[in-house]
Image (tube, rainbow over all chains, first blue to last red; front, side, top):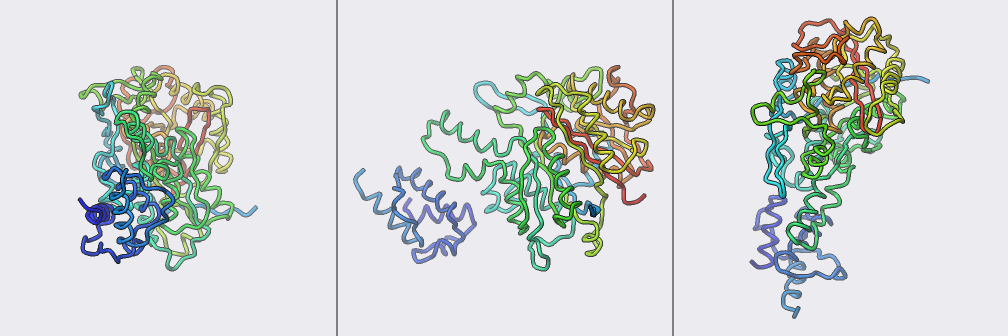
Length: 78
Length: 416
């Protein structure tokens, strides 16, 4: 599963957000994601993709920013 | 000091019988036990204990997925009971018309979000995970329930949790009552919730040797307060909430008033952590009568703490006999834990609701399974079969906690 797919799965499960609303330009806050839920989402990425997201990366604002953040970490040598 | 009268305008609970408040009370009147054998698959030794579950409770259906996902079970139960009480009080969910800045919540819980932490331990120690969900703190904290209630109803006044073992929610109700009576708040949500089925919690209670044993067939009759053959208490999960309201405020908005809360007394035995002290209980009952301005002769019913432990029941019986004197033999007493179990921090709120409904419906639910009264518990009018059409004006509800904290609440019927 790619990053966008995982965000869609998570938002569908937690907030019943329709997948077609989860597009790169969508703002997380508008989809109902608050700071706690963003932490949950990051946790889920770490779990599923075996990543460690450094805590100094700042908070992504849009779905696309999350995808970029995760993409960068997945591509990076571990 | 001017004192406001305090109306009870909303009642709500998550019933172990599955349906609503009226069904809950009807089943208690019928002497129907909600106790079943709880059997788990836990390692290293599964639980097999008589227990009261809210088996039909579906948090996602009751609260919606987004809200339910932000709460541990004790808060999910709390929020559901609070919604029920709020709707029952005829108050709107959103604060559109009224100023709720001074309204608040007093919530009782002995264990809080223990299940969230237990899940954490399981993940770390059994499943070898290295990290926990970032929600664990906000799910596990004891004040999660009252905070969620404040948020959902937009209440800007104090939002507090009371952890006083088995007296938690009686104390929460009493403290909320005092705030309204003293003019500090117009409306308070008060109640309690607990989920003692956490594996380590249940095992810890077993180790204390105060829990009744049972198999599937005998589970329903395992809790036998005041009975000569009682075998100990039966734990249960649950939640109950009351909306307490300034009398004039309730009248002004045309609210239906279930009953009046008129007295509250709380103190500490200050002698032993688990051995109850008769003099402490006597003082608590007398404090409550004095606070209510009621004479002992005026009390028509007592909902006993009555947990069915070997030590507790005779002490409570002795305290009641001491306070009520010659009249004790004619004082109707029942321990409804025989049917709904002991919900720890929620028990006081569940029994407060039972007491209010008894006054309102003029019907006294029985102590189930009380075939032969322990000689150490005689001298009271033990109600063993429901009584209907009983003229009643005033009633007490007792809650006596480990740690020695006692709390007694006094209620008046509004139909006298």
